[in-house]
Length: 155
Image 1: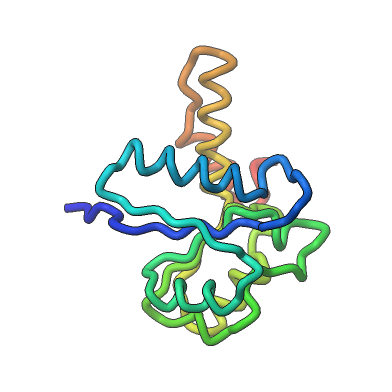
Image 2: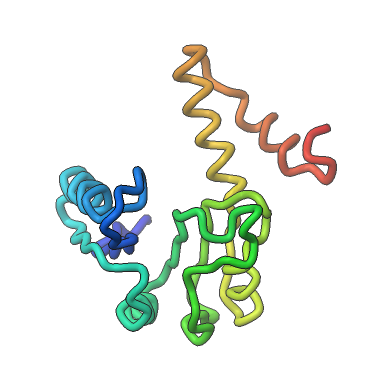
């Protein structure tokens, strides 16, 4: 049985500049869309630069998911997590970044005992959705996944 998510905290960049996908209004809109689809889930939005609030939220979480471009090539040393004590053995840490396969955040999390999941799986399913949108057909996900996750990257 799958346990539904009851609370979700979305952290966004709170800047006075309009960054198309990384600003407070978009984060709040996303939070509202989630609550509209899953009324039992309470979603709040916080400032990703407020490390104290971020650390407290992670301490109360089972899953930490990075959906920012922090750590994406060429900025591979970037991470939103400054306090390594947030990582623990019962925390699952996932990243939507797929290049590099192991981001600094994922490496730090693994080093501190957290379970980690990289972004390549998300990329495959994002590709499957795009494939269907553009072709009207289902992408052969199993074949693509086997090739994509092979040692030679499907070459």
